[in-house]
Length: 364
Ligand SMILES: Cc1cc2nc3c(=O)[nH]c(=O)nc-3n(C[C@H](O)[C@H](O)[C@H](O)COP(=O)(O)OP(=O)(O)OC[C@H]3O[C@@H](n4cnc5c(N)ncnc54)[C@H](O)[C@@H]3O)c2cc1C
Image 1 (cartoon, rainbow, N blue to C red):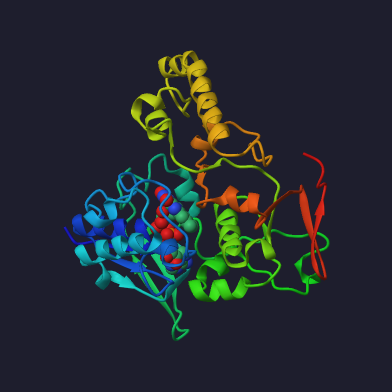
Image 2 (tube, rainbow, N blue to C red):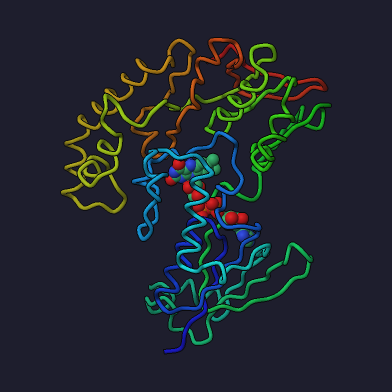
């Protein structure tokens, strides 16, 4: 059997695992990575970024964490990057990666769109490389160092481009947009790309407002508060309250025992489930509700969410199943108490020449 070529876009953890797997299967992988290193999002993080999932859950199945990192349940980003690099080295993956190579476009070769729409099975006959002879993918790739563009043809394509890297997602402002503001506006992605020292200097002594209430917003506000203290408080403007909590265990029991095992999956309705599974999930829904309420009670008791008006409007179970849970930066609410961080709710924001305009601030 001839060895098929596999194009892989991205050299984060997914791209590296895909590359290793393709090699194991006897394929010829070529990985295109726009950045200059492996690691994806982990290559450009905030100074304070740590793992949120424990090392027992966040690991390659074929490479254990080194003992010194595994001792910490939630290692910092430098250890995470070292682990990812060691995976690439351990399986000799680097020689298959083309760095600074951005895939600008991909095009399927072989069947026409009409034919593909008529297929009942994946790839025409249910096999990975399909019934269509000569089928494949044409990739247009730009070398970001020299600016030249090259075309590659591969038999199979795997996209490992992640969700958080690459292009910042900036909303449209129908009126009073950022162009009115005379100060500096930065997306969290650009802030993460700065060296740690440069990021601290960038915010030092400045009036900083962070818009958003996800993990990055809270982390950045905590970093700004560390640099500027209460003398120059950092304001977080948020619309939605999320379950940002201080640890991933309740009364000493890890959340994974409640949500991330096969028995707990029986509590949840799933697409395409059979009649018995559906009945079981329905019968167990009071238990699911009780678990969610007990966990919410624990976090409301151990994190000052009520005091600061930060209790989310949705259930903890919903947050878990939608991957909306995140870890609070260390001592976050202490910084709110000391006045280094100010929390402001607003349904919408606009800009003026010297700041941010909040709308519906008093509505909840
Ligand atoms: C701050 C932060 C903390 C996180 N913490 C955790 C955690 O604790 N636990 C957890 O499970 N997950 C966590 N995540 C989620 C994270 O997305 C995963 O851990 C994982 O790193 C995703 O890997 P990936 O390979 O799928 O994507 P990415 O790491 O995003 O890698 C995608 C790669 O594709 C490249 N790429 C994209 N488009 C192109 C293109 N057109 N051409 C060439 N290359 C391209 C990018 O340059 C990038 O290197 C965190 C994410 C962030 C941002």
